[in-house]
Length: 269
Image 1 (cartoon, rainbow, N blue to C red):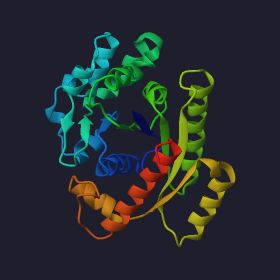
Image 2: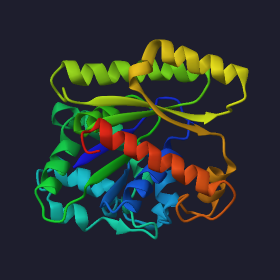
Image 3: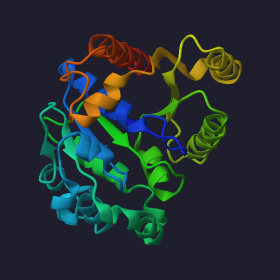
């Protein structure tokens, strides 16, 4: 089971759009996919057609994590909270009460660092388990990010051509290196995804060269230009694989290219 954590400390980088459509792309090639929304804003949850305000907290990912804190999590307890979506992707929804999750984790043993890893261990042992898990994370450092990185195969960092994004990327790389170096997850990998690019912009080309100068070995080849289809498909609560608007075909191809790259990087290509 491969676990991809979409993370960057700065908001507005298109993290949720990438998470949703990466999950859908893996589903398109026949894999069983679970998306976990760990952001209290619940953007991914709403995008996939689930009203987080209509859920009880225990019906969301909070219920799974609470079970893990009490050492009673199981594959069955996870699946009882999973919702099927029209996109074919399974969802562990977010809940507004997740705003208090960092405080809950901080008070748990070891800061809740291994709770999600425990969940995935139980899921991996079940029959007909998921091939891929995608985590949509809040734009913040802290115990939620640490818990996610401890349980992930690969961290995916969406970057757009802005100075503040470079700073946020440096902070994320530091977090990844800490998780690797302290033995929590020494095999964790990091990949950088360029998002919201304007290919004809001189500024974007300069930014791209800056990234290449420092992080070339960690950058994937797929580059996502600014496209209205991602905004419009979100408004329709659809992924680009179900949405039929302008540019959808081009953007679908980019997501399929991206997951092919990821599979090669992870030894599955």
